[in-house]
Length: 226
Image (cartoon, rainbow, N blue to C red; front, side, top):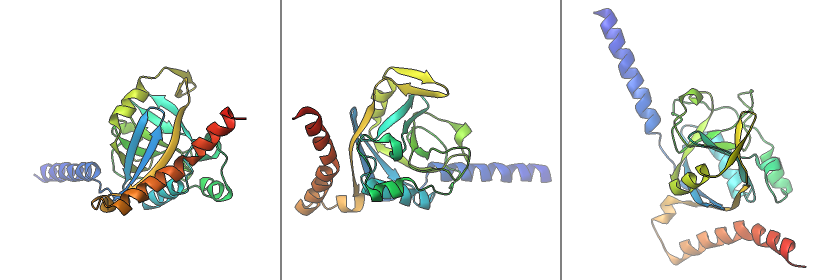
């Protein structure tokens, strides 16, 4: 009887942990990556990985992911964004460089690695995560508790499917696209603000889009015009 009770408690505890992982509370901030194959929107889990969320969101607000790219696309596994230091086409300014070089403590949790989850990249040091992260393209239970989950995709499933169909090559352990999958620009907004679609709110979002994409206009001008 004691053994049966213990097994029941263990099963109930496992069920509670799994439910928590599936129902991690999402914050109100949203980020949109505008790529060469469409938009990808995601939100954050501030209660699960607060330091990671703060760091990545700051990088976004500084425009660090503009002109960056997805260096890895492994169908059914991950699409991974490159580190902003070294991964961008446009040079970083001093503030972006300083933030991009920071590493953060590994915030490992019980949230499961399933399709759509955002998970930090890192080296063997558990506290070596910087700015590279993966979007899960399938379930990867072997990553659970080993890499910091900090958010999930809210829109852009069709874009992810397009990325999965691109031709790739294998380089060591990495499956990499043959072409550069550019993050042309990024912008962010708050869903609480989105409930009030006033002209001022619309102008605010438009301004962010214009500012964040201005680098691309300048890059094309230098490339194509005398």
